[in-house]
Image (cartoon, rainbow, N blue to C red):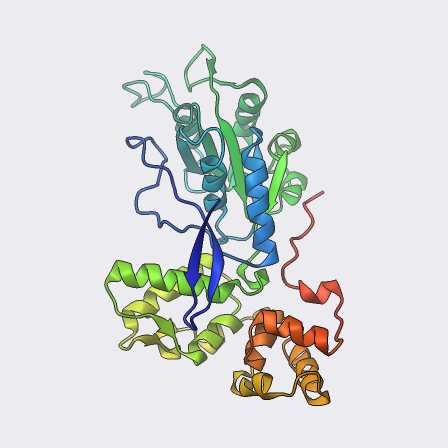
Length: 372
């Protein structure tokens, strides 16, 4: 992936992983490149660095990929990144949301139909699979595909050929399939909603996208990046967040993940009447927070303590230990509570001989084990 430096509002900068979408190919069905931002994925958390590494490795392997994760985590962005960095980048990227198409139409949308196949079929139509010839077919919410159509998709994955609705001659198709889901497919198999053989065909390589609450340290980076892009798009002179507003962003649980964060920043940019976005502009009410969102405020008022403490003193060691415990061993929030950078915090841990188990250092960032 290409690299870009994203400035923080405090003047620091972080490395961002960047994916630029390919130019449109003339409007192929399902290709939605128009209007996409230049920076699609940004992050420095261990969980996202692992995702970026998987994208690089999986892009080089021309086999199906299954992307799992909660709604709003950016599964289509990962699929586009895989396509963009693969040997099929010059071909089309065709996306179909299986949950958004009525069950009665999904067969014709996916495989196309012949003239006269049914009432109203006045001409032959190519489906999304044919439009993906030489490129990538992205099937979002694959768990919602009608059961009776899953056999046709399985045949395509096994044989590389399809039949249009009403057709008799198989059509050879060379397209890579990337699928995504926000449900546990093993449970869908048990419930009789997904074919087990289709699951094994799709689940060759798996990427698990972490929810925003597990991306330790990424919220501030993402918010800064989105603010820059949206303020420029809207022509607004808004360039940062007040400390209280940033604390609210960091402590909110984000059930809608990155999609909700983008919507929140977009709303705040419109509502803000000064250069810094305030708490009121975010419109994140306390009752919106859930039990998993840890609304405990970060004690940022004590920031001077971290820089004024005598190095390697009992006072410094006690302040670091207290901050770690108060922030549940979250390194980013502990650093903010002490008013120091993460790098400085790690130096403070070292010189005070404070050793943490690895599980605490990356507690909110480890990807879950893939589904068995």
